[in-house]
Length: 340
Image (tube, rainbow, N blue to C red; front, side):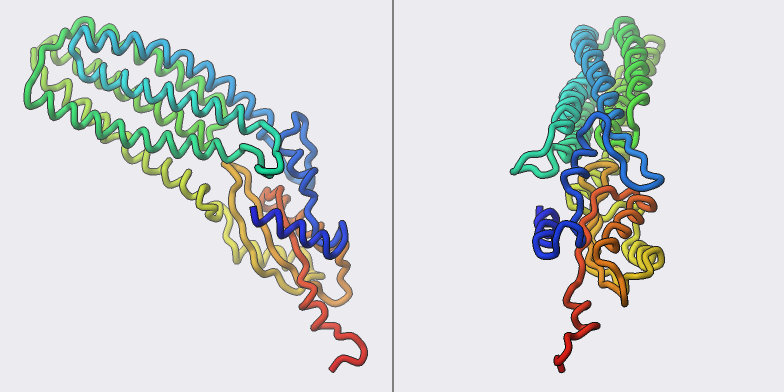
């Protein structure tokens, strides 16, 4: 990435202390099991929680894949679209959870010369794919539901009810399991949204089975399937926007660039200006920043950049920062003897 190259150039021009970010140590933070934390008030949670995320997602993947087969068979035997739709959702869940598990595995891999941030952003890709599959799922359910409304088919309410209740219990268990992970993670959010869709599908299937059993009105089955599809659209859109924002390297929602610039100037009084500020997320919960500072009268180039990075870590939890020094501005403020 260009951000890393800029940092390296600054270090080459001005020596190891003049605004050069400690890239090796900082990146080591992201992947070392114990991690070294820099700056007061800094709390790193990713290495430990990532392993916990990986464990709960793997268990959820196993449970989802196992019950998916049973629910599809039950839906096919009973003729219930609600069960088949929920089984199809569980199929996408299986793929999404598998992708999420792979994301955490790859995310803990170290960096190399071609991927200087490692594979951490793979987790955001997983969240993006999860959102897209939710959209595709709702389209499929709507299509199948309208087909069923046009040509109703018989539904066996008894078997449908039994399978739907079992599905509800399994989905509740998976949802509670995922809540033990890092719920701020884009990947965990995506997995939880999928499970919520399954929960809604199971509830709809139970309601449809009861109505069909007591009234014989089979159109309720595709109608409730459409309702389930509509309910997950809003959540899918929110997840898609969140993942796309990170992929587009947008500024994290809790950071305002101008406020950050003013705060740094207030906290580090021996710098005269902060310019070219860029803040983005490497992955969910991993903000990074680049900026250029101008030194004030009598300021120490060796300590100014480190003080700025300490402020960013303490106030904004930005642990990967590249701080360059505007030497041209310094030269203009203090011209050499004999210069006009």
